[in-house]
Structure formats: C-alpha cells, structure tokens
Length: 102
Image 1: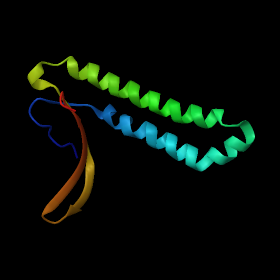
Image 2: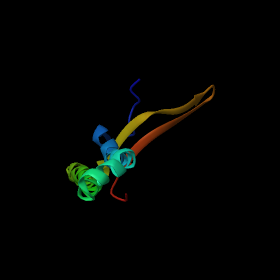
Image 3: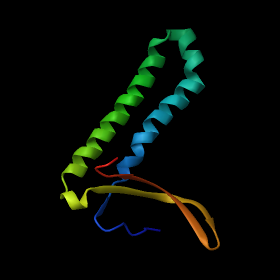
Image 4: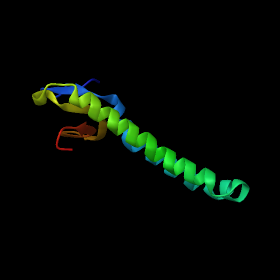
C-alpha cells in the first residue's frame, strides 16, 4: 500500500540505507568477529566496522546533495517505511525523514 507523502516531500527509499549499513556491520562483527579475529587478526573486523560507517556516511552525504537540489520550501526527503503496529482504530508507522534541520 502506497501512502501519500506530505506536501513538498519527495520519496527517498535510499534513506533506510543510512541505519542499515551500520546495523549489518554490527551483526557481521557480532556473528563472525571472534572467528575472523582468530583466523586473520583484527584487520577484517576493523575493515567491516569502518566500511559500514563509510557507506552510511556516503549515503547520508548523497541524501543531503539530493535534498539541496530542491527548492528551499520543498526540501524534505521521506521514506514512508512501513506499518509497525496496526490495531483497530490505530496505526503506527515507521518512517525516515531528512530536512534542512536534521
């Protein structure tokens, strides 16, 4: 189900990459870190952690560049996400947004 965006908002599905990259890096290091460290030392663990942060930073910089391409009154990027909790009479969604104050 596609929800309508707020006035002046622009769809930006790539915003979810900003928190996903560090989460994936943390999960990889938590799941495989001790085995990798025993076999290859600390370098692969550091590479995964730093790489995840660099990818997240690159995604954030890209989002800011995209946002700055719009008129000042329309600078809102929105990833509507999905429904988080849905019960009769109430629906709570999960969304990510980027605006000039963020």
